[in-house]
Image 1 (cartoon, protein in one colour):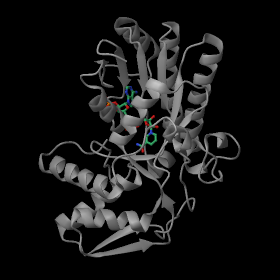
Image 2 (cartoon, helix red, strand yellow):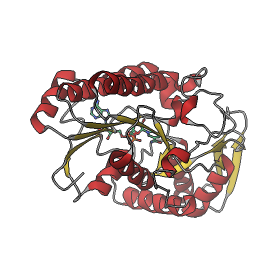
Image 3 (tube, rainbow, N blue to C red):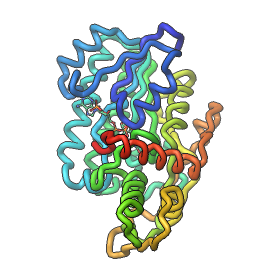
Length: 314
Ligand SMILES: NC(=O)c1ccc[n+]([C@@H]2O[C@H](COP(=O)([O-])OP(=O)(O)OC[C@H]3O[C@@H](n4cnc5c(N)ncnc54)[C@H](OP(=O)(O)O)[C@@H]3O)[C@@H](O)[C@H]2O)c1
């Protein structure tokens, strides 16, 4: 990629897309459109947009994304919108023979009982986690489409499977967000409103992996520059932390001095989930932002955004 390579980042205002645009700004010619300007579920409008801008690289970072609650409340939307978004973009890009496309899957598309740490080969080796199976099936279709386009049309398209991401510009919606931004919001609200207790769902024992969006963006740039394989590639830290440990880090960063109570009547989900990242680290990429540091920066961003009355929830 060079200064005059046209790179279309679909979903440039989202957590991943905004981080990728920060990483690429000044290095390439960015092409973007908000969902109000271009609804990517509309195949004809998407084809016309790509035809007009003729990108040489496309990154599919637009999707309907949400936590367990959002997935459970609207599985049809997660299946249908994601299938339509990715199909519109990939069909249009294929018709124009866009040479390079990066599709973003997610670590939640691996089977519920995948062997740990999860290697890329675990994909489609067992039943999915039922709470987000609609989303996962849409994403698996995207991975398959990338493979098929490579096989049938010889284009160097790739798929990446990021772990749980967090960072500035995340979705801090009270019920529709992922665990980390949801806790950031809850702890800050407790501090602001003077509550002595914050309730965290589940026992606090499950272990999860978290990667800062700026690290993820650097990983995606590495992949665009040096990965060319039909198999998807994991993007993560390879390190996990318990939800209780995560809550403690967020409590510290938000200045919460009260009690953290774990509501063990609520489900824990799978006990541990962490990716094997040997494939991507072999390409030379490593995460650079420690979790404590990344959480502190995310909390500072959240506080500033709330103080400035900016939208922090989608
Ligand atoms: N967040 C994570 O933890 C995580 C983890 C693994 C993988 N991923 C993957 O990374 C990708 C991006 O996720 P994210 O967390 O950055 O999501 P996000 O913050 O919710 O952003 C999604 C973006 O998609 C755009 N979008 C949604 N529906 C659209 C439509 N119909 N037409 C046009 N644009 C539309 C939105 O654009 P507007 O802002 O203009 O409305 C939004 O900026 C997804 O494929 C997701 O599966 C995310």
